[in-house]
Length: 480
Image 1: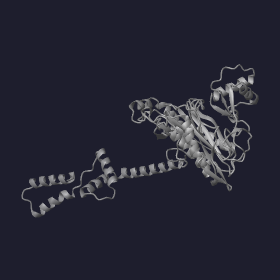
Image 2 (image 1 turned 90 degrees about the vertical axis):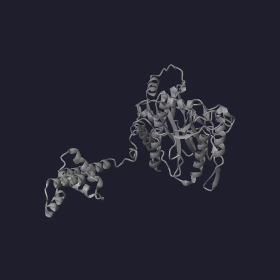
Image 3 (image 1 turned 120 degrees about the horizontal axis):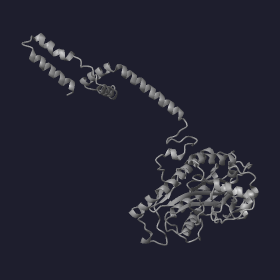
Image 4 (image 1 turned 180 degrees about the vertical axis):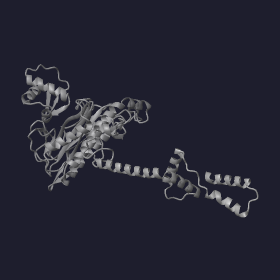
């Protein structure tokens, strides 16, 4: 029973007791009186709010008669406030509409199109998306208990994992910036664009997303956009008029970093379907290399598995069939802070080193496939340079060399750079100084690497972390 009905009963009983020998008509009127009585208007602010809320919740649904009376009374008292509330709702709806208009370019998750919001702002709690988690494989030459296969459940290994969480978050932040940049560029790049336009759009987008801040955060190396028979290390210098064509095979290879923790990741872009088998061969070879990699695994075993998968593919181009060959003098590599090639190489053919992968190492697993000889050589104008990580002190005589080295130390450190980036840093007339630094071994030149003219090459690459508990393919995305 609701409170209104009980009140009515009590009031009726009291009146019946006080009156002596009432007539039938009087009794009837006395019984009707409480029914006609209206409940006093709720002056209590809290009661008014509850009544209004109840009214809004119930809407036009079925309710008890007493509840309806209560709502009616509350409605009479709060008629004006309800109207005001309705206006308020309309205003908030309009506000929301305007807000949505302002965010017309935004996608789910807060990112815009094209992407402009830094990754750090999208994840303010500092927890960035994990990559693909995989188990460490059992090494082929050690199929016994020495491999510590129960790493997922080992409390000791999990404690080690937690200890390095700060490093993992930095790498994941760089990976998320890479992932969003490359997915945007896959939609952006079209035949007929100049290579400089493509590289500058990619680099500007990546700088915004990574939140470029000197050597703390930024791009790890120049954007590689090697075409067709050129497999790696090509980026346009100032004045390069090369234009992307419909039948080109373009390898997009770029890197991001947070505090020197580098993400090295690459993919191949084509517009003509005839190259699909070539791309599939290289992509599957890279995934095989990732699957075979792990703590205590020998590098040579990974190379043998990669070559077996890649060379099982054939591609038909213009009526002629080619076997896809692994480019034997290009390799994956280990990565350390501010050092893209940290010493260990991951071959993509059999017969490499028997060195083992170790816990908490970072690797770029990359594979290259070719319809040509499967062997690359230096060719074309050099654009990639990098300061030698272990370079001893060398006295420099040329003032221009000293100035250029100062610019390199300030803007790039031991990370790779290109001539376009020197222009952007404000360096001028640096050709002789750059040659002097290369001749003295302070800076290393990395010219484009090409197979025979007329052939086509493809590349896929991912960065992996060998965590104590598992293997994380940190740069993995929905695209590849």
